[in-house]
Image 1: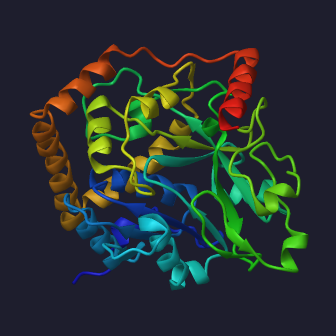
Image 2: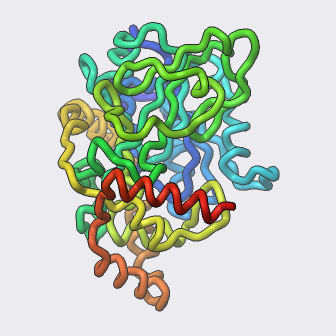
Length: 361
């Protein structure tokens, strides 16, 4: 089997930067994988640990090839799963890998999340230089809506979806959720989905958390919280571009796949909670030239290229199958008819919080 090629790796390595390992769980995401890997190599991720789950589209085979090239540690996580389900079973497996143990910094991400740094040369190294005392940096979601895009296209997600929720958003609370870039210094024992888990004494007493604007966060963030403070910007230094919906056709496939971390089905509630596009944000496109070179380098590898085309073909064939079923045709019609999500005023958001408290009593 061919090992790492100089061409594929040519834009990937940052020899003077920190070792940053990104961990992800994936199922049937092969059509998006190479764009996602290319972007994050340019940003400064140096290795990926990916747990594949019962893939039908060849994602697992693509990950095997990326493993041969030295960029990915691939773990097949096809079950059985412990009581915490697919995702936490996968994260426990990732904890045991050499790529996690030897990393300087760690982050758990999904394939619809893209790190977007605004500091310096837009790299993770530049963000860490701006926050040299940080133990952890929550990268707050900026949610990008559907933009009215109907059809799946084989091109980078950040090129297709360019409008997002406003910088100041008071509802829904999940719009302020984050994924945590954290120092691998034994302050925490294990990965979590949004933040590291199992803080360790006495190191936790010296922890320092800074948000995406460079403000130090209170100590409650050292041990809990999965969302940033409401009513203020969290994006001046860094953000996590989140593309949870994609094209309408892709959303049908997401519904078919189901959630990676639970058994409940997706529906219109998930769509409406996330279909914001009030503000254009093209900041991630500043890296386009270098990301394009890395992505083109992947295309020179015939094995990767074939797996990618297989995944794209599978996606289109699966969509044709779903649209023969009435529930999916009905869902597509509702997606077409549902307007973009409106932003609530602060007063209306406060009323919703009050109502939610009453209904929980």
